Length: 257
Image (cartoon, rainbow, N blue to C red; front, side, top):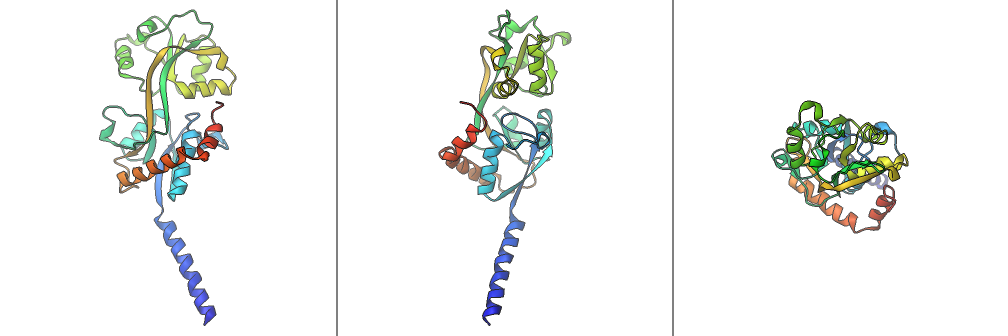
């Protein structure tokens, strides 16, 4: 009789674990390289990236499973708009609320700026100073409304050149094939530090934009039924994480100071 009771007890434990596993929440995220915030699976890095590590910490705490699908910066909006991805990290931009649900606690702050070679004689302090210069930027970036207006008034031959990675953009700036690189501040500096070129570039003028970046959910996503509740749980997890020693450990893996 004792053996039977023990057997039934073990079955109940296994059954409860199996039931829990089947009911675990799944989220689908784009898989792309956005150093130092995200490293793609193809890069083979031991670290997932600063923002991704924060997300994975909360996923584990909330017993959420994640699945990554190959993407690029330019394709992320498409994936979220049409519900092919559930979750990502974005800043507020007018119109995005139509297809995105935003969290309230930022993962990080970043912005866009104009970078020049440190030996450049070009004086660049605002968008008007870019006229007549060779400008490069990343494909798919939404820099700011003033930048968009400046971009639209240019003739086609004078528009900025677009590149698919910070690495390409950095190389073009270092070889003086472009005069100015307009891109995200932290990722560009991360690439420069990776290749030991931090001392060869500098920000020119004031940042074009600084924004908080939040966890966002696609309103057309199919895997998260109660999105507001899910985001509340993520926000609460981030609050706890940012007030814990774990946050310092995560930060130290990606930032030197």
